Length: 236
Image: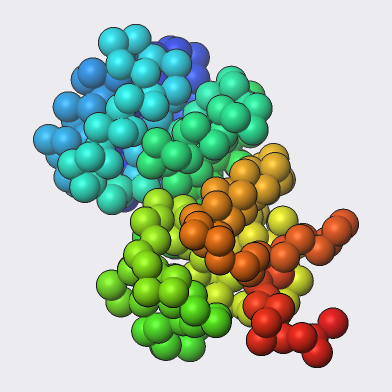
């Protein structure tokens, strides 16, 4: 299993490389953003990319966006000392699949890597193979990845798509923020759950465009529920 580590701090490189090598991974290292981007684009052999945000030449956000522009779907795990909700969302919006704040334990890094590789391989809980998911006038085609509401197309990012699919597969159920993190991001650790709130708000704005009624209900103190009040007037 080949991993690409794009990191400029020698001490961090040493710890990560030694630990992941002992865990059975083959690690290639790039010391700056520019060389890391070249390696990612020229060598489509990596199973996962570990990408620091604060890098010389090109920062991690720029590197991540450039990789995704080339339609390379290799999982990207971002590392950074910046752990605010805004920084996490910025990293995820740039195309990263997960976000780990420094300092971190090597065991947590390894667990995040395993989670992302499981997602990539498609090893997950079985779901009903229904190509079209629907609630009211909202439709999501899981084959084409196309979403529409009242016949109008909805443009979704990869994260927004996964979030909407999860909500549609669990209609009328209260879903906690931690459940959503684990199922949508594949994260088993306590990343700042405010990230969920940010993406729920992103999704709401897109679903509620053109005056469409609210589908994502906030359940105070518990989480969120996808429910069409027009169809479920008798549902508590």
